Length: 129
Image (tube, rainbow, N blue to C red; front, side):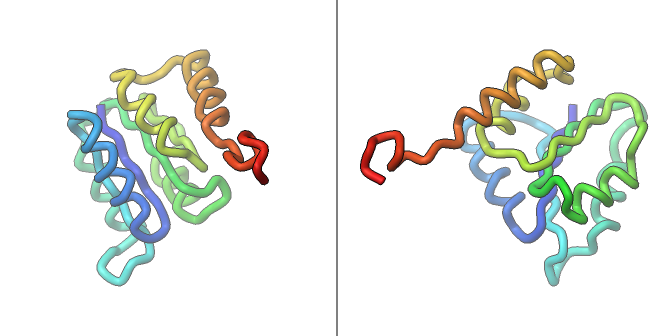
């Protein structure tokens, strides 16, 4: 299983650094698009092509309508064992990775709902907003 976090700027590196603090996952990759030292989408295409044919790949991106997500879907849309999640948060990425397998439709929907629950306005929750 391969996991890719692809974002505008260096957000992907921050996610990868944090995930490596709390997991021992292998096959975790960061793709930082539109940086001076990057060649997106070429870097992404090279990474995807380095995986074995049919190997499961899960890609997490920052923005649903963003150019990173759009380009990834152009590169690999329709391939088997390939899932893309956009607009992700850290709890969702960690839970998906810790599941250790390509999630079923039902488990994906459950994980998405739990990740939405992680987004709260803490001041309002505590009544001090």
